[in-house]
Length: 322
Image (cartoon, rainbow, N blue to C red; front, top):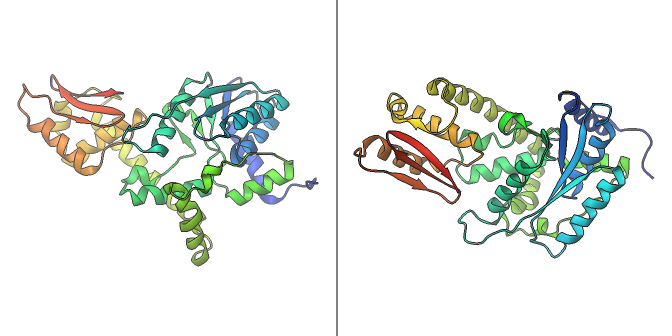
């Protein structure tokens, strides 16, 4: 039987979710991104405890990727969990295409966020926690990421601050304690054990090895991500200054040509990130920017990526999202 008294960590987790909801406009609609796993099940339970008192209209969204033979069972579990709490749930079924050039994990993530964009809610609560943050930072660093990637995930993100991550400061162990206290049930995704997937390898091999030598590894990696995020905020401020009020593509070549190459690349990265897209590698961005600046007026240089195309036309740099 779960203890009737909250532990300090349980109180902190619940308090963070309560504070997050209280900070939203009264009457706002909030959707919990519910996979059925431990983290999102805890988030759903805590949001349900405090949504009404905070004046929120609460719902959930479940994205069925169809990748596991258990996907239908997870969908049914999420539906039953929401029914038990009297919370409406929106089910989105997606098909993961092959040959996108992104890789399975990246493609699934992109389609998942597309589904989140489709839900009719003012805000979406995501259940990422400190271990996820540490894994994301390591994963991005191994890909040679820049400052934005090293910032990993932020507590508030997306256009207009729509995505909220109230559990980001807490470890998985703290969420497990919270689940035990409230008697939360959840499902386990067997693919989380597949170490062929890079994030799972980091979770099961890299993080434990780091914690064996540096017990505060997860906490310190999360803190480092916060520092990178602060640096990224300053770069974004510089981009907004350089754009002089323009907040989206297309951007005039006249603007880019007045900037240093580093600041011009920063402007393009900023505008790409506003679309929720990943900027190209530095060398590819350097090369296409050089082409944008030096190509003859009758030429139309472009950079083709799996999810979008960046190109110059009529003295402006434009983007075409696929």
